[in-house]
View 1 (spheres, rainbow, N blue to C red):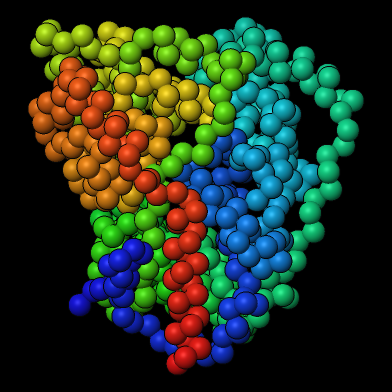
View 2 (view 1 turned 90 degrees about the horizontal axis):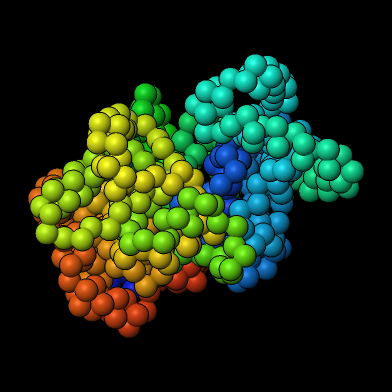
Length: 498
């Protein structure tokens, strides 16, 4: 029988797993190593932040505040094939996701800063040779006036030339700071220390081997936060070998993982069933994520794009998240089409904000065929934190009608901005939305359209839900961190008594 231990008044436990061979030290001297190998992989090609990385950074900052920089380390599998670490204070001091500092940390001087990266070459920020090759290709296309070459990559010849003109001013800039000193985890870890993985590290075989070695030779335990089992349970929404890689990693993780965290009761149930079927039951503690968005303060001088400023000038409904089939984009667009066709409602525009991912052909074809629903649908690609804040603040309400979620960060972010939403009544999403949103069947376009209609035309209903949000104590990242600490220290205390 599967039993989960949850935060709050109803706490349960999934029984299973063996005893560690190493005797745990007193919790006062325990060191927590937060793995950021996934952030390293992300920074290699990206200059923004994903939802999972928001979770990691929010918790790491608060762990440093609680235990001090001496007891909280960040760790990652380096390019030198060594598991290395340094004080998590390096991350905690960042006011936002700083790709310059992170690039320096992970890749040293070969990592280009955001100012140095030319438009369309972000993915080569840590690959000097390829960066040079593609720079020459772009220069040739710019010289020949091939605007289409740049447009296909979301840029323009003008932007390319403007970047290179700006680089002349950077030549007199001071040299970058020295790379922080990194220490092999094996050299400083002690029995009873804990590695905590909060990101997506599947497919990182060397990391798995390093964690197994730490368990065997140093008595270091590992706990993993599992965000969802989507690649296993709904693989049709994944790309290529993604699902196989994820399932293999999760099966193998039980060989070095002492316990797991789940970000929702729904994910905890899925994970418990998987581990039992795999013959490797382990403790699972449910730590729901926050209903919170760490937003920058907006000023009149905020660096908002012309596109976002234009969107803010008229009513709209906001959809935040990676654009992929699991997010149910096509059905929501069809619901909007149905409401417009009814002709009895003054319709707001529908704004999608996020980066494009896989399997969106049907949605893209719909957009092309209907000319973005005659301009009633618009996509904001990869908005900045300031841009996303402005979009949340300015919307009538939000929508998240995914077919499957492990948690549903945008629902909580919307609530933290005082905005209700239309939410799919499926998987974990009701755990986030509670009684503060309007629900719909994500498989039924008619039901989705009806829920959207209610929030569009019934301003009293919308105001009542917003009042309920304002009166509710939403879950914060402080609450999330407190739960992590509670469960970690409870395990230490139980082991000490045992």
